[in-house]
Image (cartoon, rainbow, N blue to C red; front, side, top):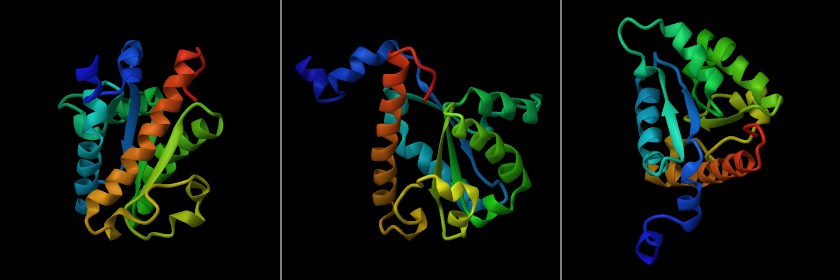
Length: 176
C-alpha cells in the first residue's frame, strides 16, 4: 500500500470498481488550432484515463463505415461530462452550437450531465447561455505562458468534478 500511495491515492484503489466517467469533447473542426488544443486536453487528462477514472471520446474515433452523426448522438447521450472547447469557430459552428451544445445544456440544466466550457481564446462566449456556466481555466488557455500552467489548472478542477460524480455514483444517484 505504501508503494502504491506514491502513485495513486488509496481512495482511487477503492473506487476501481466504479465505471470510468464518460467525457465527450466538443470542438470546431475547421480550426486547426482548436484541434491542437483538443489533443493537448486529452494529453493533460491522460493520468485520469490511465487510472480508469475517465473515458474520453472525441469524434476522431469514428471509424470508416460508421454513421458519424448517429455515433456522435450516442456518445453525447452516454457522456456524463461534456467539454466544450470554446473558440470563435466553436460559436460559429452550427453543429457544435445548435446540436451538441444545445443537447448538452438541456441535460446540464436537468442535472444529468456536467458541461465544462474550456476557453481557448477570447470569443465573447461569456455573453451566451454557455457563459452562465463556470468555465476553465480562469483565462483563455491560449494566453498561458507556458500553456502547461493552464492545462494544470484544468486538470485540478477536472479531478474535483470526477470525484463529485463518483461520490454520487457510490451513493446510487444518477450522474450528477
